[in-house]
Length: 481
Image (cartoon, rainbow, N blue to C red; front, side, top):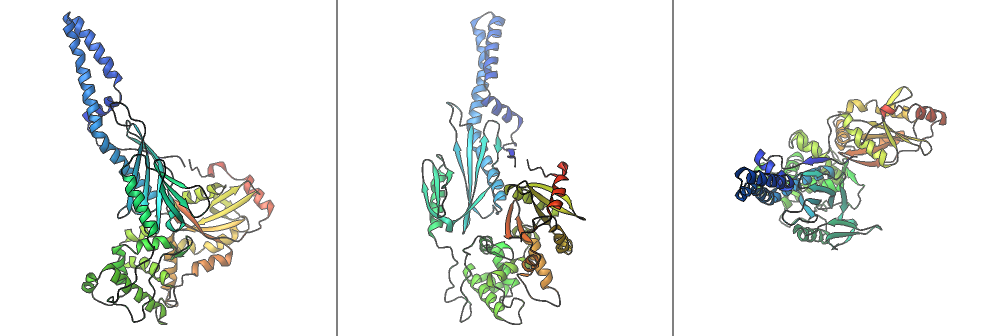
């Protein structure tokens, strides 16, 4: 994916833009000063005419002063823009997130601030931190060249965090080269180092309830962070679920959505810890009650599914769509899936005929050759014919996937649970349906794609595969540049 470029500081008025330009490009003013001095000397036939050359030089001095005064604000604008884009690439909300943008400037001139900067953005949550590094900034043109990817690192995979040669060095428990976050001389580097070390040394769990909290006589154990990156609940990653569970708005919605005893006024008087204890006690009660909608459903699944179902009455649609990575159209899934295929060595194509049907995205690898079929779904109506379509694709491709968002998967489970003949949450329904057909599952979270279910390897006829490969139209290839 090509690096994206944006400009900052576009709110300058015309005089400010002119001063900014001449502050960085002083040669025209020097030439003008020499020319005016000579013209003045000839015009008045005296060396006093040389003083006319001071006019461009005065403008030059004013331009340099303007650059030096405005530069800190322009750099801050670049930091804000990079922080926002990095949060989007990391798939997290910038509001309420502990984040830091570090600037490593290049060499400084004699009279002007450094022209070039390299930026690293770090976003810290309870379970992990995300790094968006590699963005560069040209102060003279106010142009930001954005990095293309953000990387998540879970604290449980970190063995040490140190400062080495102008960078924060992160040593992972798994073998591999340490991760480095350049800090340069940025004063925020020391604070970031201290925050990361504190998070690393702090046990990642929710505090147990106090004796005065309104829980049952035999309270359930508190819901804690998962030890597996792959664990999902209502198709939301466990770390993301715990991040959502720390949001006061979500906690208040769960109090109402789960029917925790007490009035709204009583709930408002409770501390966040008390609310969590009451929610977990209610979840435990629902899970153990035979007549309950949640009977025998794991507690963390109830928690995640309840957040999704709170979108009906207690959370805004915008909040739910953001937390479950909803997309407006099926086509919005195409590019992330195509990039995922490309990262696995496949050339991605769209709308390729496989038998009597067209596959949304087809990955072609010359090794074999090998075909990977991916069906994109974003609505229940589209998925009703999905298994039949995917079954026919298995006759032509080596593996077949369904790609969808957590929002689609959660909505599918909810529609089934709300059926009059069911009236019970079944967290494994979609998984079972896909595994029965030997299909895989890709969960798309904005630009990130996760393989949740591995597909069964198919054995399509070599003649069929060769025919499809020979007929791949170049204009259907997905361009990711």
